[in-house]
Image 1 (cartoon, rainbow, N blue to C red):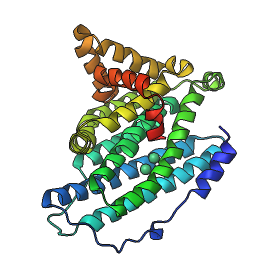
Image 2: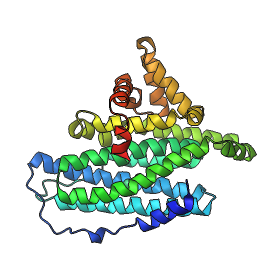
Image 3: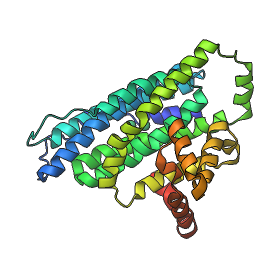
Image 4: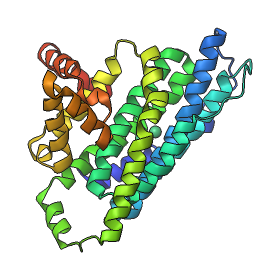
Length: 313
Ligand SMILES: [Fe+2]
Ligand SMILES: [Fe+2]
């Protein structure tokens, strides 16, 4: 990737919330739908703020000044997405049926996740960032937009999606970089972690995993079962990530190799339970192990090659 060009694109792609016309009247909705929509956007604001904190961390770690500058624009993007989500929640909160708060599980998870990322290696952090961006920042948001089905939301989402394609491109680039020989050499030159740091890292990781399931259930799985009942977008996000970790260089790295091995275990009935438990331990969403997703992806690749990539590009 040409990082200079990417940085130019990131700077040129900045937009302002005030560009949009927020004064239009929202369409009539049932009470149930209005409450769901406002809650989704309220939680979305929280997710976007977590994403901003993640890129803040990436920017702090980046050595190349262009990388640093790119990640800084991502922080701005995610903060803008968070603000846009808050405004959308306000926009659709026509009847003020109740007070909306971000899910408790989001706060707990965010606190521990951001703390854990500071301890994890940049390579491992990137695995979680990439999965998170594909599932939450792309699949979930697109599903919410389809569910709301209104130009105000669509115009915001079109802009957000443009930003997200740059984020995903960089997530993939970083994943490839961490799989490269150049990075392995850099890693070998780094001093070994002290036992204290090692223990702190494991503690932070364990705490994150403890809070990952309730968070994913409240923020992702429950809404997705309502707004993406066919599981189309989960399949798209899953396929996209699967294509990345199956690349020859990436598939040899410890975490992608572990994911692939765990998926293999999950495909056999006798070892499925062990795979599920292990996935729980490493914070892998259960969907990543679903053999039916792997089958559906294979069928789709045969019958409609390129479709998945085109839809999420
Ligand atoms: Fe975002
Ligand atoms: Fe993002």
